[in-house]
Image 1 (cartoon, rainbow, N blue to C red):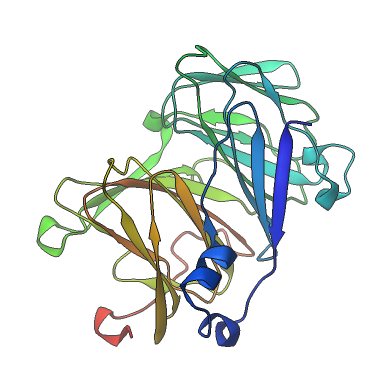
Image 2 (cartoon, one colour; image 1 turned 45 degrees about the vertical axis):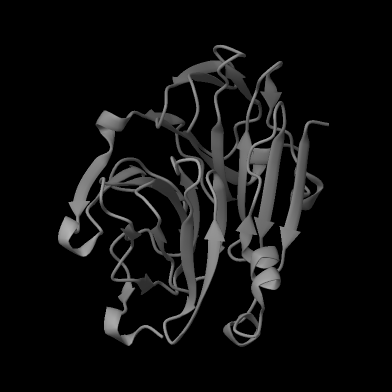
Length: 280
């Protein structure tokens, strides 16, 4: 078995605001996403979201079902989003081959039985960042190159949040059931993401921070707008954001992060905005 997983219960705002630093990190932080020649999953009861990583080095890695799903195969009732944050890799889906370069994405719809991950060069492995959600319908498997993303530039250097949002696996680019994924790149000199902050009670979210230089960190903010908490994060770590929580971060330098969402609303712009001066 080359797959491992853990499951985390959902917490209410009343419970979370009582947590200390260790408890917050245990409940929401995913410290290790990638392990050589394995797939590691973290399941959250917020929308039954699965976050994981596949890093094939010495051998190919097969997407195996896990007992949590009670399914004959992993994608029997699920969809899967992949973004490669490593070197060149190959994903085989029921015999069809897709090559993924750095920061390219792949959507795999419900019902695909065999998925295999490979690196083109074992000395420079691919790192496939994985998000999966329950699915009620089967949509076609499709690769999305960076040139195919819907790109939006927001913020300004003056407010330290000049950033480019690459919408990769969203309904304005391709059909999905409820999974949405994209990537935000901060410009040099900018450190704030998703500021002004927002919540969206119709869906939860997971952030994965990468391209954080050695010796630097990102401080991720969460909690209700009037009860915020923070978690210090390192390169290639992920954090779970409940639907009632803000999700924002400030780094000690610029960085990149992948956002993934699930819930009942596929409208990317469906957000309940919070004034910066109202945050507590």
